[in-house]
Length: 74
Image (cartoon, rainbow, N blue to C red):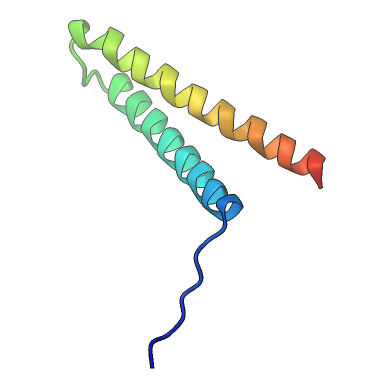
């Protein structure tokens, strides 16, 4: 007999997506900061790297706002 698997709800999928966004963003920020401190980027790369770091910071802020909204809704 085939086992029945449950499909995750939209809320569960959103929670997983937010957790993943948070982990990826925080990890990328840590890597960027470490490599920058070690002088691992050339000058012409810095604006691109800075933009990526800013995007990751925005991702963390989105997750933090979402978590706060979820806590207030409970």
